[in-house]
Image (cartoon, rainbow, N blue to C red; front, side, top):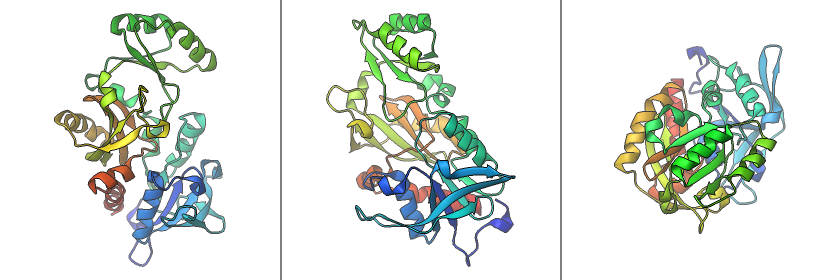
Length: 324
C-alpha cells in the first residue's frame, strides 16, 4: 500500500475477510472469528465475503461483501449489514485470506486474483506465497528438520520406502484437518489397496513419512507471527488415533517450547517473514517438523486460554507496522 493510501486517524482501518460463512463458525475455537473480534476492538471497519463472491472484472478485483459486527455470544455472534460491492484495491486496506482449504484450483485461482492487489492493499497471508507454499510442500525446504519423508505417486518408490522404514504414515499431499491420513504398520497388508484407492480418485502424489511414535504424547501447534514464535498448544490424539487435529477429536493442552522447537522456528522464521506469511501455524512431533500451515491456521484461542498470549493481537500489531 502506498503512503497516500495508508489509513489516517480520521478514518478507521478497513478490513475485508475472505472466509467460510461467518454465521456457521464455532466461536469457541475459530481463529478467524478471533481475528475479526480483535480488529473490531481496535475500531477497524469489518467486511466479510466468501471466495465465490470474489471476481476480476475489467482490471478490478471485486468482492460482494457485507459489513459485519461481531460479539462473543453463542447463536448471536454476528450482525451482517446489506451487501455491497467492494473494489478491494480502493475500498479496503487489508484483506485476510482465511477460507479453509482444500488447496485446489479454486483456492489457487483466488490467490491469483488477490495477487493483483499487490502494492495497493495488504493481503495476509501474501497470496503469491500462499499458493507457492503448500503446507506439506514448504517443509521440504528443511529436510533435516523433518521425519524421513517421501513425496511421490510412484508405487515402487512408496513400497521401497515402507521396506526401509517399516512403520509409515500415508496422507494426501493437499488434504487438511487430518482427513484420509493412514498409518501402515509393518505387518499391515493394506498398503497396495490403499494406494489403488488414492490413485484411482486423484492424480496428486502422496506424502509418506516414517511414523513418529511421539505423536501419542502430542503434536505441537506452534504459532509464528511475522516469522517469530509466539506460543504453542499441544494437541493430543484421541485413543489410538494418530491424528491429533482438533477437528477429529484431538484435545488441546498447554505446552512450552523446547530447545528443538525454538531451533525449528529459528530455521524457518526468516523464510516465512521474507514471503509475507505473517500468521503461520507449524506442526511439530517429538522435535520434528511435519507441516507449515499458511492457509488458515488455527489454535490461537486455545493458546490464549492456556498462556494468555494473544496471537491475533500480535498479528494486528504486525499488520499495523507493515502499513506504516
